[in-house]
Image 1 (cartoon, rainbow, N blue to C red):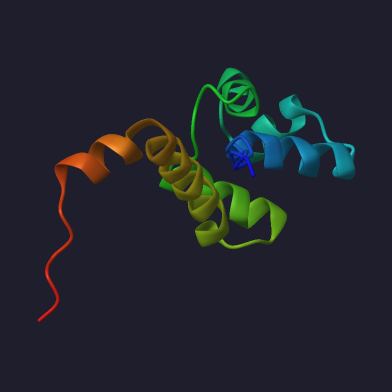
Image 2: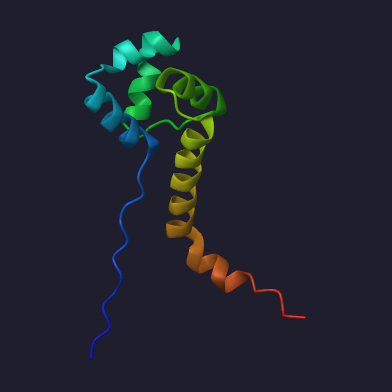
Length: 102
């Protein structure tokens, strides 16, 4: 029987989550930028997946949407870890041996 290769879903950038929130709230990127006091091109870059969520942006988004800053930072961290795992996992598995059990 042939083994099926597991297909991994593409990592979700925090900008995709933000796009969904904006769509559901009927809010434009420009309106969000004004409310957060962030340049509109920066919000656009986040929405396009070209920029990430920084601590400052997480605090602003949390304040505006009534969420936690940790939620936004976790979205960014999880995205970055998935990208790193996809790109470097095999190399790290070859180079780094697990610590022997005691």
